Amino acid sequence: MFSRVLITGGSGFIGSNFIRYLLTARPDAHLTNVDVLSYSGNQENLRDLEDHPRYTFIHADICDADKIRPLVAEAEAVVHFAAESHVDRSILDTRPFIRTNVLGTQTLLDAAVATKLERFVHISTDEVYGSLLLDRTDLRFTEESAIKPNSPYAASKAASDMLVRAAHHTFGLNTCITRCSNNFGPYQFPEKVIPLFVTNLIEGKKVPLYGDGLNVRDWIHVEDHCEAILAVLDRGKSGEVYNIGADNEQSNLDLTRSILHILGKGDDFIRHVEDRLGHDRRYAIDSSKIRRELGWSASRSAWPDALISTVDWYVKNPGWWQRIRSGAYREFHETLYGNRPPANPAPASA
Ligand code: NAD
Ligand code: TYD
Image (cartoon, rainbow, N blue to C red; front, side, top):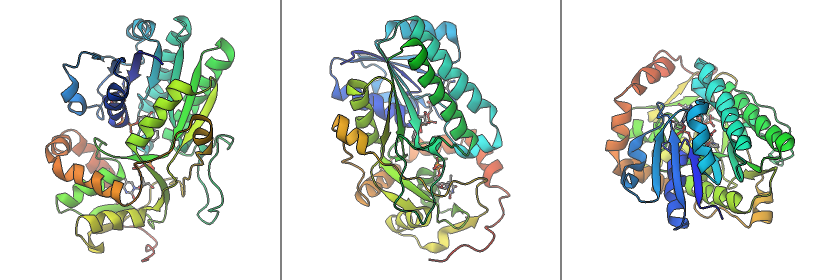
């Protein structure tokens, strides 16, 4: 068990949920969160912990080696969440993705090797495996699947995974890589599909569904992901990769209709728009390894209850997302959706 843990990107969606989870699960753990507070980093996500005796916030960039090294030196373990995380943004501009996801990860690894860090857990994504066919429901990504990233986001994460692998192989750094499917839950930045659609609908706006809406994502509640990360931090085998998922595949159209139903709206609130460039068709995770080897299983992701409670969180916390949606995020939203043409050809109706 590690008691001094450095968390990168802890002010974002998953990182902030993980910090809250770990402080409760480990009453002896001291956590330091290093975050640059990019557009998706939000101090409000952890406002209730500002005076917590076992929590420290450091405002810094993971690419800044001089600031990062002493923080890594003080830690027993690093859990590395910090990243540029949105596929659509990576299509508009790849550079921040290469900088943070690739250079930032290597900066942390250099510090970890130099200071003989005991454990480095790298939070990656199922998107490094690329895309599965809709009609091959017998196939899911395993840890042995080929790395075939399709978006600049996924490619930058795959590059970071390779750097972590190299640090383990070359320098003997104690590493684990986790590759999780799509997360949902509280504090997710409202550019990702679930909080975007929920907050649009609460404001009486339509939801922009890409292409034919038949793309499939495998949804897991963020707290199940956090529990899996803690299992990997505690018991993961050095040099190993662990897939994390909850066996919850949903097409975007079904997901959208579930959200519409929860909020009492009809299909007329769907705005079918042009597809995302290079849009991956299907993700599906085989998480049997982590279940078998580390005894973890998802217990909070069951549909529709987990989706209903997540929608309810956004309904009950309008101040949190309204402050975000009224800021600089507006400009990005306008660039991505402002003049986006309707889907072509016409989407499937069922
Ligand atoms: P997020 O965008 O909500 O949070 C990212 C955090 O990283 C923010 O707090 C941001 O300020 C910080 N950050 C960005 N650049 C930084 C830099 N240069 N230095 C320091 N901090 C920086 O993202 P998220 O959804 O919480 O994702 C966290 C991690 O989990 C990412 O590595 C992502 O690839 C991975 N992941 C996400 C999902 C998902 O569904 N959201 C699924 C699997 C894996
Ligand atoms: P997203 O939440 O961006 O996650 P990811 O691309 O990492 O899977 O998108 C989830 C799915 O929802 C994806 O297939 C794209 C689709 N989507 C829309 O249809 N409309 C939108 O406005 C957004 C943001 C996503």
